[in-house]
Amino acid sequence: MSFFFRRFFSSSSPATMEAAQQKAQQLIDENAVMVFSKSYCPYCNNTKRILNGLDAKYKAIELNQESDGDEIQSALAKITGQRTVPNIFIGQKHIGGNSDLEALGNKKLEALLKEAGAL
Ligand SMILES: N[C@@H](CCC(=O)N[C@@H](CS)C(=O)NCC(=O)O)C(=O)O
Image (tube, rainbow, N blue to C red):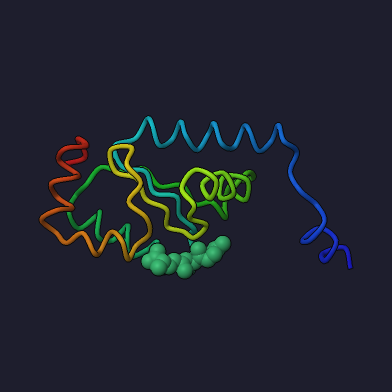
């Protein structure tokens, strides 16, 4: 019952949501490549494998390991319209998820990474 209550009736305060949105935006602004991830997510692991394979410099945070991870995920949904992880930004530009990253193809991806200063 308490799980049910928390899951459906509790919500973060507007101040907490505002702080999460600022944190998400700061991470996007300060990193050439920003990956909002979850440690158990196979799509996220694939994205990190692709970036590692190219030796790209990137920052990933695992939202399931952050105390404000749920709020950051909601903030990202507000900023990008995307609720799933990975949620990927290259050079402050929203790329999308792992399938969107893959759809770029290596040539376009490398060009974007170079332009962003991640290669
Ligand atoms: N097509 C998406 C699939 C991503 C996806 O389904 N991610 C799952 C985690 S593995 C997700 O975000 N589930 C909702 C959640 O964790 O809140 C992609 O390629 O990134």
